[in-house]
Image (cartoon, rainbow, N blue to C red; front, side, top):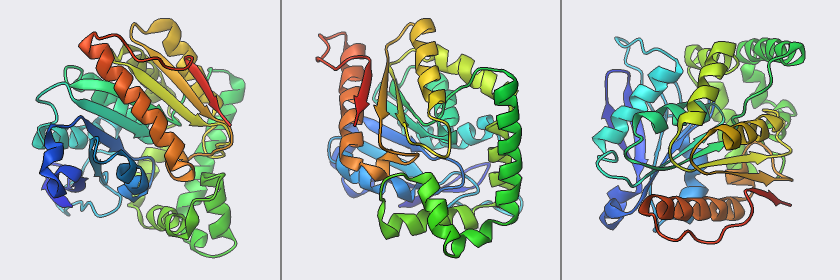
Length: 308
């Protein structure tokens, strides 16, 4: 566990190569968090992927242990969050060779997409988890407007989620399957203690039409293999959006795209079923390495995989 001071903040991060230097030459996986949550929820997955991968997690500005200095006024935008992650990638030397996988969850999928374009020469693959796109029509416009109002309400009264039964309801909205008390407490604590300005900004730009259009365009431009993952019982973000993203990229992108649907999981499959989620990540990472090495690619299931 370390801190990396940069122009935006004093960034807290973990790098498994710090405890085990032999991992420095392994393929690296950078995990990009979702909205109003620290990097702690990646811990079970990191434990599964180690020692085959060098795993790097970090707390985005406004969350967890990362400190925004009083003199700093960072911009809470996709580009701003990508700037701090890019600085960390360069600080750790993850941009020096093609050994980098980037995994983005929820809002972090937007940041991961931006990073995938910035570091295209270092990128082995991208994973976009629960971060979809939606057709532009009156129905989705009304839905986005409602979600914006829900974000404002949640932020103004978020401390009530520390009290039962609202605490349990909050956790159940995030995770359909059981994630245990430890991680349930973490999800609630992170949401209720995150920086209000950062959390408000992220909540609103995540549903901004222009931001979503740019995100859609950029996902199509990723030149490395992309894995789209979604829990089909996600109550936080409609899972159909990730399916739409997969279908759109499959039609328009030049590099391979695959979709994994966890039929009985919600918004946090890395906690709800760590074993099977890590298996799918590993298969994707191995496929991507073969893709870039131009070696015969390992047999994989169909482009769309349904896991019951």
